[in-house]
Length: 454
Image 1: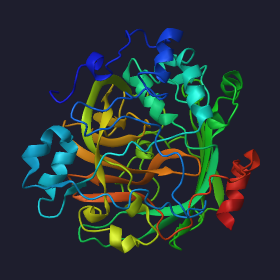
Image 2: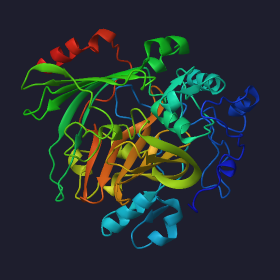
Image 3: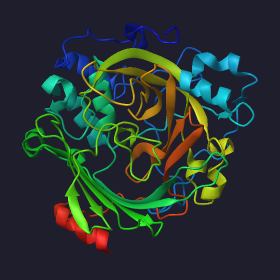
Image 4: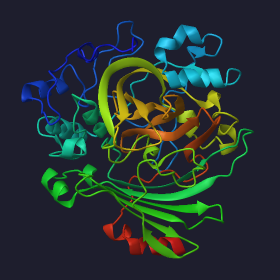
């Protein structure tokens, strides 16, 4: 891939690669406070200055913001620098993934990218940075990379030596300690007609709790607990899902339960994983597409390809605004491009190839991961004929009250079906509550039954 630099050049201050369980030395970890950011990104800008130096990201919310508000744009005066269209696509191909290029080719008259000044806005609490530095010299992969040990709170592998370490960084990136949220998804037809599917969701993240102990986490073997209830439309309202995600996913696989309103029963759901269809997704995403990638990585071989500069959605506060309606966002073919902000950022490139002795509807996935946050920004997905199948895009913002960089909307484009699903629509819903006081007793099958009956 000519757009990629060699890994040793991409990180500039590279470290010698080693075995899957290798830890870095304290001398190498010290670079996380110097040449590299605490999360392992290059502090310096790029050669032409189009990517600036990292100076800590957003340190405070804009004036007038109150937790519970939709997050106002901290850069309201930024102007479009240039717009990529099907007509000038050739000029910018080196800054695009094959999947992004396919969107221009599929929708040549309507798809575009408005590109703005790059703002390295990702920021996290100081204790998360310190935990990441601590993890760097002790965290290890176990079970052939299908679990982790000796890590807590922060990114486990800020200087990744292989693709498995990089994807675990995405899975374990900091998103606060607990939250409740409302929102939903839409899977429009080719004409743009859609039915909004509403969700009430709760998420507990024991791994992220300040002061979490790696040994205690390993003993409990729980990364997070997630509960989701469909709130609308009426025909499926009350359908509910409960997931307990584990640190070692081979020793103890994900535990999941579903509540069916018709049967009024809770059932174990071992198939809520891998390529099982996502909840009410009309077959447009898999279970492991949620959050751009989740779950056990054991069906793929993972290769860290290096870094490249890429145009990705970033600081998408306009798309997040409560002044925007769902009808303003959802359009035929793709979401409204006038609401999307693109910026040039450095991304890690990780390629996942399906193992010959396993099955999945995706044969190959290429993940483009923001270096400042470990949020997957774009994923190109290929089917078993080696043809481009889907393109996933995460539209990120900084949630000031945490702070954390996370997606406000995720969109999966099915290139072959010429349809898409938009997940995380929350413009007309209450904003996330990162201060939610959640209890373990609310994440049991009995609690799921109670939630489904309300």
